[in-house]
Amino acid sequence: MSQKLNGKIALVTGGTSGIGLATAKRFASEGAHVFITGRREKELAAAVAAVAAVGNATGIRIDSSNLSELDTLFKQIGESKGRIDVLFANAGGGSMLPLGEITEEQFDDTFGRNVKGVLFTVQKALPLLANGASVILTGSSAGHTGTAAFSVYAASKAAVRAFTRNWILDVKDRNIRFNTISPGPVKTPGLVDLAGPDAAQQQGLLDYLASQVPMGRVADPDEIAKAAVFLASDDASYVNGIDFAVDGGLAQV
Image (cartoon, rainbow, N blue to C red; front, side, top):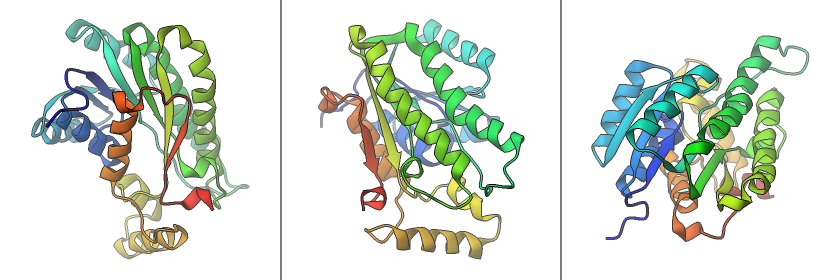
């Protein structure tokens, strides 16, 4: 069986769990050497081991919102491989607070991870990006819909979509493709943690979200990963600047 990413060098930020980990596994199984980043050493080591079971992986512990740590990341990749063919800028997260209770700390954390981190990850990667590289940014259906107490996160993901529209014009002379992938609700640790530590409350959140999706269920992370493989591969050679909704129809009705 041919591998869609054979010989490619890929970077997945925020690759220790959920969508990032599932995508790193998919990229590796398709023949890429995958660099994975995360903020926690123990979780990063476990992710690298999981990806290494299906392909080649290297872990680098960094916080993607820390610019000096990003410099370290790209220095190591440059010295090791000399280029990046696929960049999945996936690191991010958020929390829920309604208008009237939003704090400066919550805003700074959310925009630092989802906007500042994405911006400078991509900008600092530019010298290593191969001509014709594929860059994928993680958006969200939340950037297109309304959700109570989720406005800061939603605004940060709307900003990610705006990055894609503009950056394809900035790099068009290098044939670098930028696309956003916008999942709907996905059963990940980051999602269920929004409900708190109680298992019943977590399941209640998943059940409620499933009821809002036309397909009647939340996604598995691997379903998002398969879509990311498409955007990363030559199958998507003429796909540029899109917002690829992988949301079960949530934001389409």
